[in-house]
Image (cartoon, rainbow, N blue to C red; front, side, top):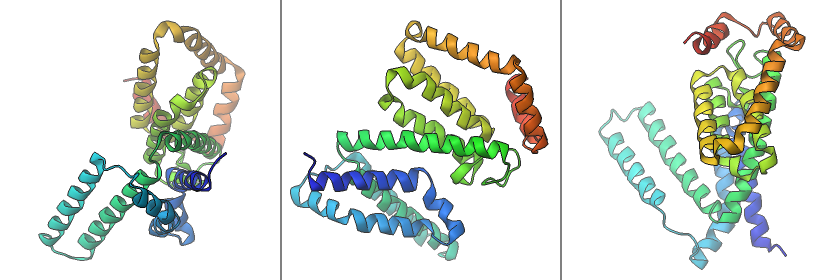
Amino acid sequence: MISLGSAYRKFLVIFAVGIFFTNIADFSIKYGLIPLVWIGLFAVVSAPAIMKGLTNSRIPIQPIIYWSAFYVAISILWYYHSPQDEFAFQEVQTRIVSVIFLVLALIVFNGTDMQRLAQKWIAGAVLLATALNIYELFNPMTFSTIPGRSSGLYNNVNQSGAALVLGLILSYHVIPDRFKMAYVGITALGVIPTFSRSAMIGWMMVVGYFFVRAGFRAQIRRLAVLAVVCVGVLVSPLWGDIQHSLEQRGALTLNVFERIQFFTGG
């Protein structure tokens, strides 16, 4: 039977991933809610769990705590040797708030069960981001300010691609083996519409590492199936229809073609 305290911590994990990893915290700026509001709300709702952890001495002192303290100290020291203008103050404030959020997340995510739950919800966030990026590919500039490149809720196309790659890294091991190849392919479908070269290369490196670690012999059948599907789509009339639709919608711009050429022409 799940205790009330455990259920509440699970709620906090879901809240953190659902608001911050999906980037709703930044996306909501358009509607007047700045990230600081979400962080403050997260601090308030997580206070009972943090107090309980402090009371029971279950919060471990990890290296990240020492790093956070050093980072804040350096930032404050830098501020006193800066012009101390509005920009410098805002920068220090952002760093301190970021460290506070990091420490709160460290406490909330403490424990194997909570980390595994977070990984599952991160997988859900990856699927959501992929769906939004694909949608924006056929409906340019729904979220992004760059024609032909998708960003989803991340506002920035490079950040969107990086979040998908990071999400793949964090959630890969909670995906059932029979769905791993499909999940990797779906993640690629989310990264490609960003046309972020760094994200695409990062995805290749991560997937290559996963395959090497698992052993190529164990993955050869799945790789063959994935290759056949990709080639089949590219040579079928379906690809021609997709390309024509994207051109009609203004998704295939000169910038996009230049980024594609980066891979095809070196």
